[in-house]
Image 1: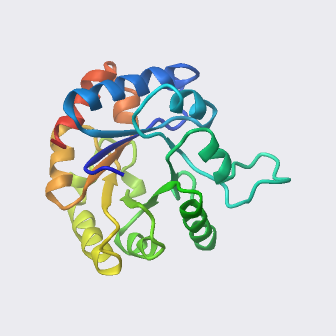
Image 2 (image 1 turned 60 degrees about the vertical axis):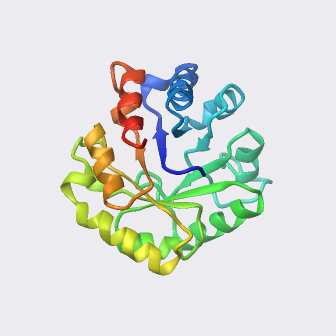
Image 3 (image 1 turned 90 degrees about the vertical axis):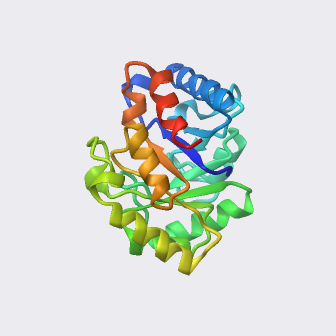
Length: 223
């Protein structure tokens, strides 16, 4: 994972249904190349292969199930995510939480199959516990701020500072990025000033009237 980074989580918003996910990914790719900034996208699982095969920026899956390939109807193993072309996976998002033992298994297994792991956590102490598992990066996101437009870097800067401090103590090799309510240049800039190495953004970009303008605004804050 090249840092600092802007990770765009498309979730399953109707704005990215079908080939619209690829359109957003291509816009992100264009901004990444223009500014020389690291941008990754996490499309809906149904569009993972389509996006991965048609852009050069990193593509992450939005989640995975703690199972090995086999008789697992309806599950998505890491091996299938890897084969679809993703370079990493988002784990333990507040909208798709995992049990600790499942999270530990997925982080370990992802390492074995050469997938990066971006583990989400709601607070500093949970982030520190997750860092002990050795993921590629931690994304601290207070769930009460997700999708509100009230950026964690403005509303709860102490959460970011404390998270960076604790994660460094537990595993200094694991960088911290942040999300929840991030929607402006200033929000991103403040997050970086507080010690994080990037941001995880969803609705502020996906629901924007002009994708390129919004991605450009947020990405510029990383330069």
